Structure formats: structure tokens, C-alpha cells
Length: 227
Image (cartoon, rainbow, N blue to C red; front, side, top):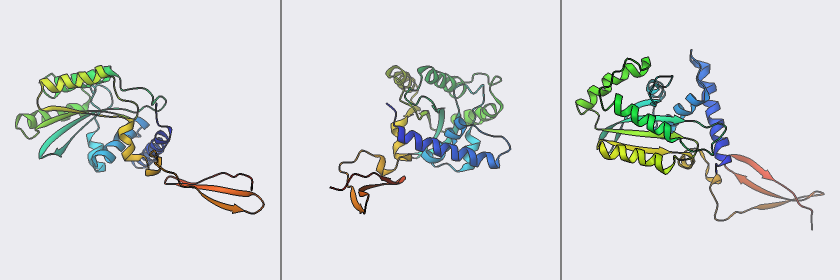
């Protein structure tokens, strides 16, 4: 079951990001692209230039929406991101077909020498350098990332990732879904509280009013008649 409050906060953040991006770029981006870029900034703390450079989405990307390198435990890791922004149905999981497409893309175009002529220009330009870096051990590990604001993939989808990582020792994977994004965007007040404290003030002639203050909501109030 999706978290409506988190989804509302996220939708607002994405809309703000897209509006800002489209005010300065010559080519407009949509919400799906905005979501991907926003996540790269918020989760991996990439700067704006690196984020824009990492995007390879746009048709003929073979399940790879973003490619970037980052340090992890002294290893240089290539992150390969398949992003899925669910605006209407965040209750749905990450499809197994998309996971298989991501695995196939990484297997053929990054870990092996499958011809790149049919890739889009941005991806086609990056693959030779990535292959050279892997061969020279400048990239030590490859991480497949299934990123969504929806729900996690099915068990069979996760098993596909596990099997791929098992036969390719340099590969590991991350699944980031709605529940994983709470620590990024959801304020402390949105967590399930152990106790709730409500203050009451007297409004002459109108009874008493209970007030509840939340981090991302200025004031929530109601009233009941004076005793």
C-alpha cells in the first residue's frame, strides 16, 4: 500500500525540480527524467553537472537510464540505473521485465562486447570508455540499481538480480523503492509516532481548539464545544 503523504511530498519535489530545470535548459525534461535526476542528487549527492551527464535515457538505452561512477569502500563503482517513476500507480511494483532488460543491457553492452551501433548517441559514446576502464581495472565493481517511487519488484525479479550477481562476481545490485525513499524526503513528523502531544487553547465564544504542529504542515486544527 503506497504512502500518500510521501508520494505528495515527492510529487511536489519533482515538479519543482522540473520547473527549475526547464527554466534554464534548451531542451525541456519531463517528470520521469526529473525524478531520475532528483534521485541522483538526493541519494548519491551528485552535482548537477554530473547528474545531467549521467543520463542516457531516450530510446535505445537497453534498460539503462543513467550511468555514473562513484567511490564505495575504496572501489570505483559503475552505477547503472533503471528508473521508474509511477505518477498514477505507486502501489505497483517494479516489473520483472524491466529488471531483465536492465540485466541484459549490462551483460551485453558493459560486461561483454556486444555491438553498440544500435544504441542512442549518449549511451553509444559512453560504452567504449566504460569497457576500457573495466579492462584496466579502473572500475572495480558494477552496481545495478532498480529505482522507483513505487513498490519493490516481485521475489522472482529479485532472484533474477541475485542470479546475475552470483555468476558475475564484480556485480552487485540495489533495489530502491518507496519505503527506501522515506529517509530522503519524508519529514520526521511523517513517521509513526510512539506518542502524540496535542495542546489545547481556549477561543472565547467558539470553544476550545486542539493544535498539532507537523514539520511540513504549518498547523492542523479542529474544535470542539466548550464543556
